[in-house]
View 1 (cartoon, rainbow, N blue to C red):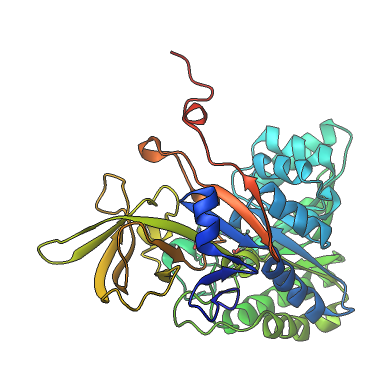
View 2: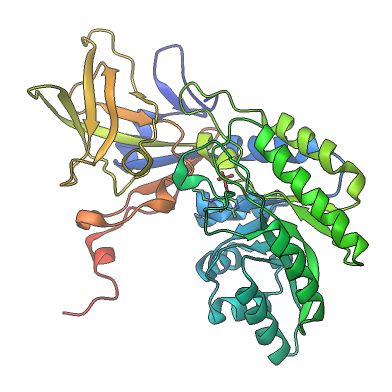
Length: 414
Ligand code: LLP
């Protein structure tokens, strides 16, 4: 939470600019990102890996704005993608497709062809059927697809059930034993080159133990594959490092990287990791304007102009996101509110039982909104999606303009 802090006058700052001035200039709801935070977070991972051969593949789904992607690319990042759309974004942003890994359980023929033509580093294959599909497409095109098996190591990431992905019961990856057979099968299939091994066990992990467990399981498989004469080039440990939203105590980016390096040091493989949230979450905020205060029978409501369509995490995962006043005004009495939006659903809330000093017209800041915020937004209730602004020092620029009503019906016919 070190990025967006108050100055001595009590105004929340985005680097060198006050959040309220940005909200006045660009309107609300407004996503604001800090370029410095994005750079710092990336470089913490990168520096901690030191000289060890590594590639940080930013998980595009966390925040797929072209400017964010371009910045990541300029820092040397590769990309973890999960759709043809994300690959198109990486291309548009000038990312290096030779640094792209492609995860996801449902890659279509069209998407596979697109990724093959783009020359990506690796398909993270999630099933036997997908391996066969990639092989036949590559062979028919006279190309070679680099593949890794996404192993489902069956470890409990101890996170929200919707975002834990490395359990037997999840749809992701291939169990260890079947992965072993799948590598042997891949060796015999045309059009394939075995590149590496992959796993991703979940998101918002606040302990390193599940990562270590998963890597141990991968290492045992790597050893067995070696005995079988199958030699890999990389190990992809996925993403998942947690961040501070409230009172979590996640490991630092440095501790995460050092722990992983210690585990895989002797393997002689390139390390790939796929961080999303830990790069962007606390590099972004979402600013709302208080429209009304409304007394309820049981709770008071602070009704803001931001809704679940702009930021769905509280509604979807009951995620606790910090909400605070953009300007500290001690003259307003503190009251407890449910902070709710304009969408016609009771599930439309940003936070419950929050103590705030707020009056209509004030701006509120949601911290930690840089990840899975805008990228999960929608037009529900025919709401135009927010503007996104990038701040660097005292400079700021729009990196996505606020949508207009015309954007709402783009592609539709009367
Ligand atoms: N790699 C793969 C294959 C993934 O599926 C994900 C996230 C990542 C990397 C990046 O994980 P991260 O470092 O961001 O934890 N919308 C949810 C999070 C969903 C995560 C899905 N996969 C949320 O807002 O909490």
